[in-house]
Picture (cartoon, rainbow, N blue to C red):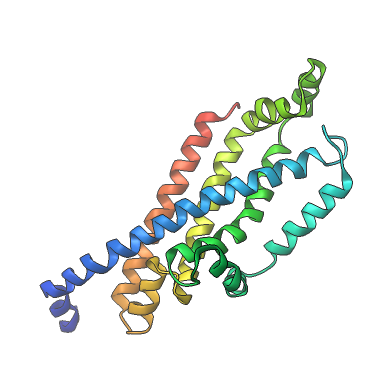
Amino acid sequence: MDTNLVAMFSDPAYWESLARIIPKALNETIYMVIFSTFLAYVLGIPMGVFLVITSAGHILPNPWVERTLGTVINIFRSIPFIILMVALIPFTTMIVGTSIGTTAAIVPLVVSAAPFVARLVESSLREVSPGVIEAALSMGASPWQIIYKVLLPEAKSSLILGVAITTINIIAYTAMAGAVGGGGLGDVAIQYGYNRYRTDMMIITVLILVVIVQVIQWLGTTLAQKFSHR
């Protein structure tokens, strides 16, 4: 092993710096991911539901609503996150009072993830058997009851997998947010790893992100199998 690496790893100051930098960055990443995922689903679930129920032959067919909402979703999904983050700086400043930091990063994260969530929700709800919906209609269920007692419960397993996929995508976005002052592990990788030529910091942040992604994917798959009707 390189003598410089040995000296660095044996230096208590090195581990003290890691203990100061990494936990703070990890907490920032978790903070951004949790709030961004939650708010993305608050916005994305209604959009996904409307995409499905307003489609032809569904419970509330409305081609104009479906096409308009679908077009808006596609527009936002087609914008790369880093460009969207810069373009939303005035909006972000208006919402949270600043365009820099972890809280500010949540705004573009939500705007970017919500359309993605809408499409995942749409895909999950379209997997629900039309026969189940017809049975609910024949028993006099209202559109509201069909949404909350038929569509969402029947698609629960797929929706849970969607949450895992969305969370993993948002983790990747938070890493990009670090490049423009968003904080978190991405910021550590840029500021300490790339700018200061610290390969060890790059490796540490990548390993932490890999572990987080693996845990989330495992948890999502496990829960999806548990709630699966098949």
